[in-house]
Length: 549
Image 1 (tube, rainbow, N blue to C red):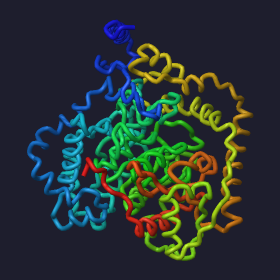
Image 2 (image 1 turned 90 degrees about the horizontal axis):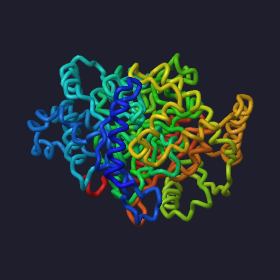
Image 3 (image 1 turned 30 degrees about the vertical axis):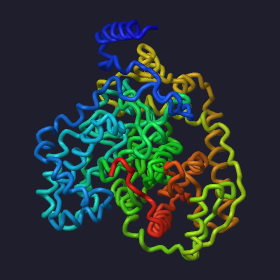
């Protein structure tokens, strides 16, 4: 169909839909009717139909702050850069105690930086979907109250970004989907915990739409609301990873102190690794999922994404706590401080399993040698394939019930969709805008007719298979942790309910980042933090992306 005809058809259709109160109102940008960008890229997922969102104007995000940004100015931005850029939370808090910086300065710095980069067509990463319009006022309040805080938590006053499938009372929670563009929800449980500790919610990050369980073979980091997330280490060259794509790119580009992502299988590990940041997928049940748009109540978990291990532990501490609404939440959640115990361990005598088939990666070998030099024992493991039969069925059947449950209980009154079929139908009306890469996975969910009895067996078999896989490696070799790369073992770790912590491992010859991932048994978060902290201390691999320093 010619572009003009497609445009006229789309406008006509939206005009018809605007009279239906059940449909969210969205504006279409004609320039974003899908074409093909990057069409010569060797990776099919890097050939983009869409770069910028067709239903949201990126330049509008920072408009509420125009006066404050003008007053802040470039000179102050440059003066504060050394105090903030790539600094960890304890260092930033020290600068504030020493009166070199205020919480208002910190928040305004990040908004200024987001405005500066996201409105530059040569640099924009499409990492941010929305900014909290009250954030500067909230920072001023933190400054005024700080003197009355006897022992403020390290997270106090720190600007945090949330993946846009996490509820926050102040901004829509869209999951990147046009269908949820007016989903004004209450705070998710973990957001309540962050606020209790004094954290400031800066805004929402882009993501792979519906946490990348929507289209098949589509680009990582694309959503109808946020557009195409791009990797700061290689815009249009490297994938962002997904589905917590915007959280990874935003942390890498220093858009906030830290961000929160979510993972079902690899959705924190992948973007953390590919954006050279630290990401933790904890044991399911350590952090609440209440108020988060779901894929799978069996496997879903939020987790922290940061520039270093210290900040990761601080953010994890701030989100923990038993949630009566989430039956999988561990009653002991929040009773241990990962930050306070992080420096207690030594690498000496620790036993790490490394996979023989990963020895082809020079940086993996380098890290193994560093561990040996610190007195750790390295045990080579034969390559094995864990059984994941029925994995997609698990996701299909969980989402078939979990998403409607979320829509019914947590979505705002403006959202009247109640099933996946409703959303498919809505998207199909203007497919080129709402789902330019199709919605094959959603369609697969609807077609899946697995019985409840078969589904329960699949879940049980997967968990048994995952635990057997890791236990056979760890118990026979008396391992403290298994070392993987990126999200290579994410799915088998997910079904086993094993936590995974990835830290920067290095950069390939073309500059693409990759991460080393520590995997341990359920409930061993403290041990993984200790090992990762010591490993990070001996390597210090992370560097700021060249065009974003």
